[in-house]
Length: 169
Image (cartoon, rainbow, N blue to C red; front, top):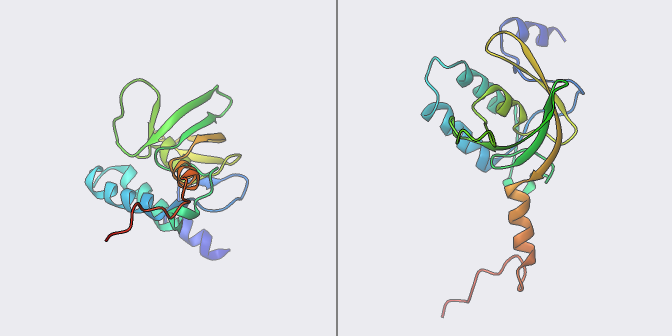
């Protein structure tokens, strides 16, 4: 317990706290690699999001992409969530900092997007804002996840998931 208190005092604990005490963020190897690169390619060295992203990467449980459950929020997922008592929002989680201004995307390089990443349906997480506030975000549903779709398509092939085309002569 004192280790966590000391780590919190030094600012080493992740800024994303799970209210219902579930697990750490769950990331597939592919998303982990993309996020690690984005921390340096897309975020300025002084960006507060760079430190937050690095803490999430450090604290995440990283598994082979094929082992990500279909109810986990990954890059490219369509997710329904609610911030506080506000209305349910439906967004696609992107890696890019600036998506099209249509309101249908949320970037993983923002407090809300980073808080959603690697979380499961039914979880409620808290994310700090840049103005020292805290957002409570409840994940209602993962409507579409690229990894689950890839597994579904692979299983639906006529010759099974290992069909790699004709054998070489």
